[in-house]
Amino acid sequence: MSGWGNGTYNESYSSFLLMGFPGMQEARGLLVLPFLSLYLVILFTNALVIHTVASQRSLHQPMYLLIALLLAVNICAATTVLPAMLFSFSKRFNRISLPRCLGQMFCIYFLVSMDCNILLVMALDRYVAICYPLRYPEIVTGQLLAGLVVLAATRSTCIVAPVVVLASRVRFCRSEVIHHFACEHMALMKLSCGDISLNKTVGLIIRTFNRVLDMLLLGASYSRIIHAAFRISSGGARTKALNTCGSHLLVIFTVYSSTMSSSIVYRVARTASQDVHNLISAFYLLLPCLVNPIIYGARTKEIRQHLLRSFPSAGP
Image 1 (cartoon, rainbow, N blue to C red):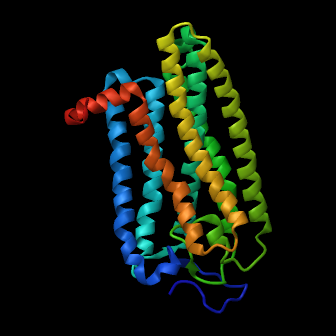
Image 2 (cartoon, helix red, strand yellow; image 1 turned 90 degrees about the vertical axis):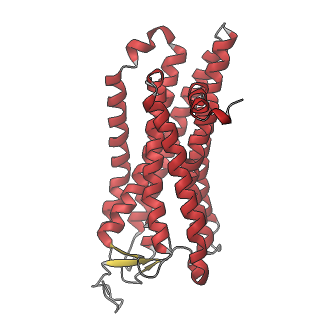
């Protein structure tokens, strides 16, 4: 067994047992099939839209490339979470070392943050496309797009790194069992045997500041976009612009509502069982991965048309 079992402050566990849905210990095997099926559906739907964008030259435009990037992040997020969850249902393969645990924590929060940052880049792209249509090709170049994606990744790293670095300095001596399917920050912090008020404060400040900033930027962008869209004289162009914005706003609502509901429930419903908290965590981590390709595949006309050509029997 890795780690130490005397529970003193001078010793710390160096590995942990992931215990996804601890209230269902005897029936955890029954959870494998539904979550494995969910993983396969997420992989297939996201990969299908990405392949459609990559294989069709007419879709090699900033908006569609950003959609493909967002869905690639979805695949990475699901792959970071679901295989670990499936292993947590087994008593033989559910042990994870502290470095791997911290690595998984970084990847989960980095990908969630990257999801939000790509949505901000999409908002900027649509703002330029609708408010300055004649100058769009010269403003939104491949070089600018690459720079914005690097900036999004850098911002995500800066948001997540302080939380993970602080977590790496904590001693864990209360237990070696993480009552979660993944190395979620607060699930790991419950095993600490020292003062973690700094960890909690830094995590809360970073999350609150960035969520508020994101919502302000998104709100300002889309209010200008919608206002400009209603001023377009051509009815067809106006409908297309509003439909595109509607798809993005649906995705934004899905991502931010699932994230915020998880935070609210964690802080308000403290009497709820650990299984309920874990289910809500799974909801906020996996719902966007499942819903995003459906929204973009069904509501984005150009992508939908190419998908229907790929599956002729599914067409009208």
